[in-house]
Structures are given as C-alpha cells and as structure tokens.
Length: 111
Length: 115
Image (cartoon, rainbow over all chains, first blue to last red; front, side):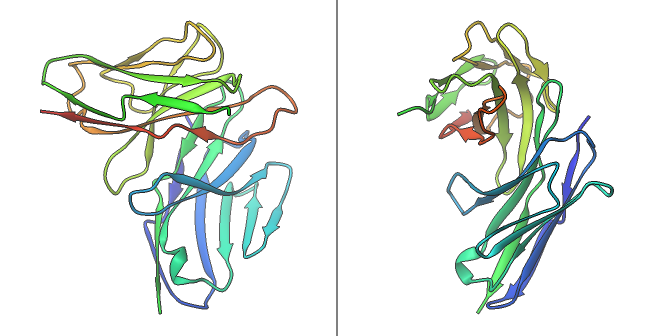
C-alpha cells in the first residue's frame, strides 16, 4: 500500500530558506498536499500539487514534484519564526482514494 | 455553511467498553476518512470509504470498526479490542467526482481517553 516518508526534524535560521522533503511509494498518486500544524492546533492546508505538474509556486512557498523518483519537496523562502511548526505531506491514491499522511517534519526556526 | 462535524469533542471511556465517534458532513463528499493522531506524531489512517456501503481498512484498522450507510455519515467504533485507544481522532472528507476540486476537509477532532 501507499507509504509516505518524511525526515523528522529540520532547523534553520530566520531569513534562510527551508526545504522539507517527502517520498511516497504509490506512483499513481493524483494529488499531493502540504499541511502545517502548530502546537495544539488543527491542520492548515498550505498548498497542493496535481500529479501532472512539476512545480507550483505560491508566495513564499514552492512545491517541486519529481514523479520519477516519487519525491515531493516544499521550499519556504525567507523563513520566519512563525513558520515553526510540524509540516505534513499527504498523497491521494487512485482506485479507492486512499489518503495517506507522512509522519511530519518538525521545523524549528531560530532568530 | 458546509463542513464536517465530529462528536463528541471529549470522551472518557472505561477499559473494556466500546465507544462510537460520530462524523457527519454536509458537503456531499464521496470519500471519508478516519485518522488517529498520537502526541507528537503524524496521522495514521484507520479506515476509509469511497462510496456508500463500502469501506477499506487503513494501516491501523485492528480494534476499530466503521459503517457507511449514508453518504454524509461515517461513524467510527473503538472496540475493547483496541489495545491503546487513548488518542486524538480526526475525520476527513474529499470530493472525488470530476471537477469537484480536491481540498481535504477536516473535522475538529475527538479526544478519547480511556480510564
């Protein structure tokens, strides 16, 4: 079945770029999502990309999709302390529409 | 306004008892999902359903059961067979019909504590 993997932790300085990586196993995944979760809060959709796209940019966020390697990344430009949170990627498969989340990457931004 | 409603928000259960968590959506979405989130961890898929009267096991289905008798409802029963049921449970839905968009909608979650 679908498996989605992320590195557990990333630490950057304020103003630097952050790159959070995700790999998935189901090559037929149609949509891939990035969510942000702050402590004690729910999941906030940041962006998503459809599988026929290679890149999507939305203000400070850039999503890159490498379908051959089944690799998804989220780049946050000019990272701020308010970006400190856990970031989850998720992949939606075809067929029975299985939606699987990664384990989350904890981003810590230091001043 | 359309959305997903989960209830109850907080629930205490004695060991050995079954408990049912409600998830209702008025978004006319086809696919619905149940996840479990433990402190400091990600969302793990329990069950999911693409259409009425059909559902599939997720990665951690043991000790749980679901039904999908109506499109808008997808209740989750946490049975006494679930070894470690204390967790935060999250329901989600997405539209799957063509052109309907792809945004995942989440309920506010249910905190289950077994005492």
